Length: 505
Image 1 (tube, rainbow, N blue to C red):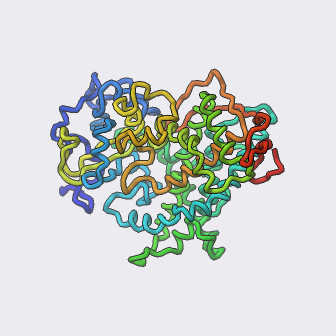
Image 2 (image 1 turned 90 degrees about the vertical axis):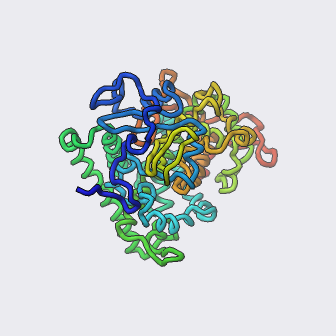
Image 3 (image 1 turned 30 degrees about the vertical axis):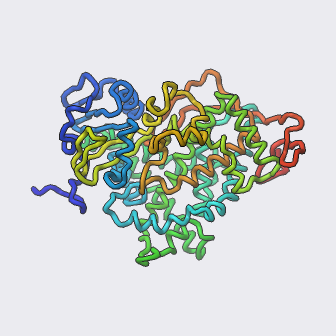
């Protein structure tokens, strides 16, 4: 029987490393490899990334793991990743984890194969939705959603209750992308439990993660019930998005947001439009990716700020200095929070919420002058280890230090050593949206609250393709500004106010 191939001539489906790395034997693997099971001794299906990080520390900047007959190559050394980031020689590889999401979002921006035309079509149609002008238009809605978060936290502070940081950041970022992008209100802060959309989304991500660790032929047997539940989750996501689109079509259009672009904008050169099915896939992608990674980044940043009061004090002082007594910071004022942004970057360095990305060879090549690769061979870049490479970040690479992102330090480092949003043409299209939103929210929270950690909490990282601190709770206390804290004109600054309802304290 003839081998099934993609349109670009490569074999379809998973391509195990032994088919693309002629000198694979030179790449180290964990000791104790077993027949069939491979390198699964001590592995946890719940923490595959952290397992790989543990092996990376022991085996070095390139290594391999085998599971159920599938061989994977991992790379994290700075010189290797610099090579893999070369767009003339390498391109995005839709790896196993991403391919497992294709039943959910098909050939959307994040999951499309390189040869599929819908990626370029959607990218060209939607890229203007993340221009500077578009971002400035989203800013007031970001402020409004942040006001609902602070209202929620004000009530918790008044009652002496700890806040659920990951849960509340998920509510915040879901509402932000759904309102700015699609004009839809999920009512997250009015719900005692997560919105069913979030539950279904987490279900699909968890299922895709599980498929990474189960041998293909065993999926129908071992995951029969989970597969049925996943099908139900996908159906719910589809129904939710179809209703959002139906409402928009019946209303005659919105105000030029992402959904309007998807429904009404033709490609500027070809005149082609997104199909109804692709619109559905893109909406789900933005709703999921547009909030899942940002909520994790905010949660990690708040964790580190709560454990490093000196960094929190510096960030807070910057907010006071830059924003002064303005009730609602403007779009331009957010970009001036340079230390707050460094806090966010350092949190993403330690725990990039999209912790890995895959790259494949466009043609036969030699990686970093040492490892031959055939066309279509691929490697999984461990961003979480690249960001800890002691050759770049020093011996204290596991230590939280926002000053690593001072401009002088950034210029002194090689290119391609900080990759929280992927790389190249297929890097995250919404990264500026995410960074603006996260910087704004951190500034608002620091201006308003003191963050009080639970001294017994130890950071535990949950994995569901993206990363999130698990079980993170903080107490928040209304901040009492020091007397005479300078405002923009030297006047004392009043107690921080809600950005949406200035009368509320």
